[in-house]
Length: 98
Image 1 (cartoon, rainbow, N blue to C red):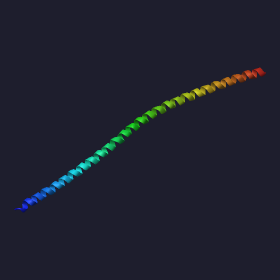
Image 2: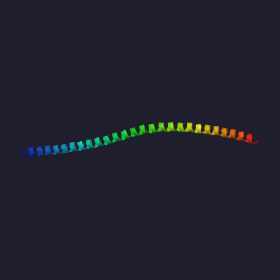
Image 3: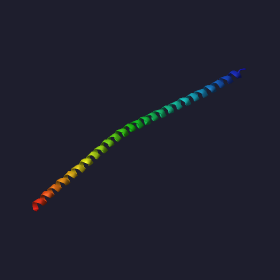
Image 4: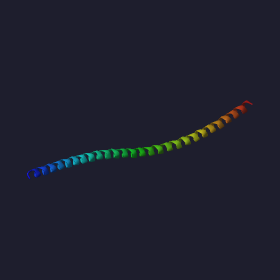
């Protein structure tokens, strides 16, 4: 009968070691998962920041495109007026020569 308590103690010790190893493995897995979650959050934050930058840049591009359109229209108007002025000068010069 002296062997039974030793065997039970050995079995309990082995089970305790397996439980401790399992708990260590679980803790390590939780640490890895926490690290992954942190990296995922950092990536998510970067995606949000890039979206904000993209929106800002798109708005700036729209503003500059509108400004370029206005400048193009103003340039065409100035060119038209210069053509009219040059025609008037030519007409006066031609009339003066005649």
